[in-house]
Image (cartoon, rainbow over all chains, first blue to last red; front, side, top):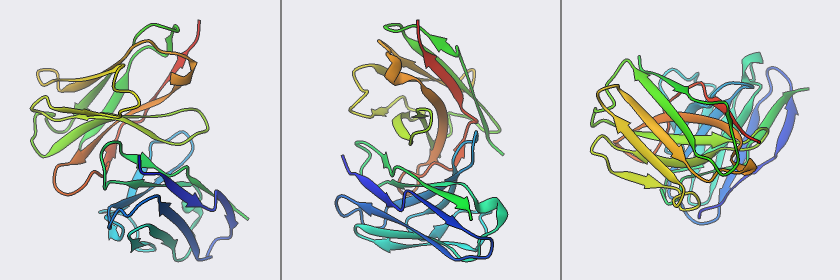
Length: 108
Length: 121
């Protein structure tokens, strides 16, 4: 299995801050990395696919970058509705599809 | 706009079979444009992919669950189903159905709201 490791596991930030979350794969996955946002009691929501492509309807303050084993999700200016848990997911191998453990973004 | 809705028992006894359905509205599950997956999330933990099915009936399962899982499609009722046998407390989780487009690599672009299944006697 391809292991996905996110850092940090949690972070505190303020509205208007710029925030970066990192995801590292245990082997090269090219650009096949997706990011999701999950709010309490809700299903995950796709934000970014193929490392840097913005899903339709997602605000442009979300961006993704990276290739190979190291990837980042950046929120350029935090809004109140952005406080949530973020997950990365590799789509390089479907045997099996794997997710990171999540990064909880909290209000400072 | 597609909507997915999971349903099934919220409580299952250990060693029994967990059975869930996901009813899809706003588009046919027989569309060749999508795969249909099941995923789960234990309380307070991360996401685990269980498996997917294509309209043709072809399936792909997580090797860690493959011996216990069956995913099927009922095109007449526009829904997919999940059977997980020999359950234990470790299978307690919120179970989600989701779809992913056939073009490109797997990305889950629409999800159901999820249903909590507790395994307990």
